[in-house]
Length: 257
Length: 202
Figure 1 (cartoon, chains in turn red, purple):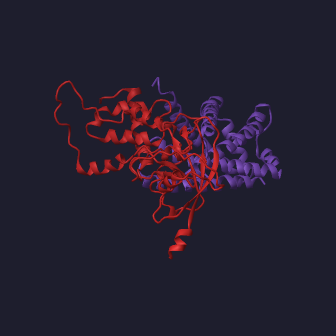
Figure 2 (cartoon, one colour; figure 1 turned 120 degrees about the vertical axis):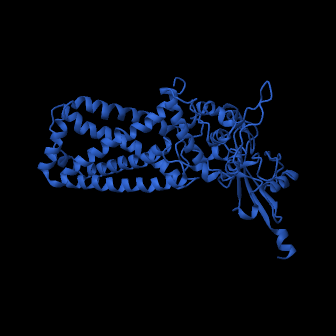
Figure 3 (tube, chains in turn blue, yellow; figure 1 turned 135 degrees about the vertical axis):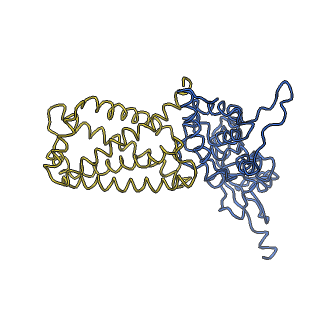
């Protein structure tokens, strides 16, 4: 391609903007000069450098969230051409134009494309997504984890709390208080750890509460949408089995702790 | 299980859809199928069902109470979903959506069907081959019955799939694929039974 042809190429964006958490959203169109290997974030940075829309009006720079820029932090998730995903790995060459950018409305919008994912971090606290190892004295080494199981658990540990699965889930919405797939899968991760397993019942009982696991309607959008390929629906089904057994234990009593 | 109202309600909703409501659906469709053997066979089969001992107890505890619970809680579940098949047109998401649509259609059909048959029977009408023949002579009612019966069967077959997931019976993706085919087979088989019975009256 000649130099001139590359220079004339532009990338068009249609961005859903919102000035404050309570104000009404509106559309604004932008056009930026194409560069090879561009992604949505580098285009947004380009717009930020010179915030002028296609009508030639000066406007405010677009607000969005980002951090790692390599799809491991989950912060830059937004709805791109109708699908929630990370904007850092959304390559311009692979997207249909005008590229439509919207915030993930399942979460409260802070400004423009930036949302508040606090509910997910609160959920992780709620389900005790950690392994308690602190004691008043040295508890010594914990039980060992077989290598094969470690590799299996690593897949579940790839969750970056990005919120894409909650955005895709039809049962996570303003009418329901469903906790959503991501924190549920974390329960399976920590319950399968040899030390974490010691608090298995506590985590299961938490997700048996209101807004918990039973709210899943098996649409399985989560597993289709997860950017990390986490087997979310397998986690949910496995937890269905665990909580069913736990509920029998709670009701009838058990010979085991 | 004091704090786990919702967990218990959901699990109960899933269970009742299969036992007893789903089992009753199969039994009802099978008895209807006597119609293909002629008027007399159907009338004697329906008379046998009518004259079962403890009829009212059976009707209340096997049919009406579980069905009412499943219907009312099911409506609540259906209307708390925010369907998004236009954005995420995956197979299972469509099944999720159709499950909710067929649930509502089935409920509308059942209200009408119970009024037209069981409540009329309580008011003195004779529920027999001729009654169904008269109802289905109307092409609008014939279409309504076909849609209603197919909706109920779909809702049962797909509900059986999600029952197995919700109770933790089918956990692995492969087991869920196999149960998709098995429940699809159940849908086709029961649809043949149901449709054949309907057309026996026409």
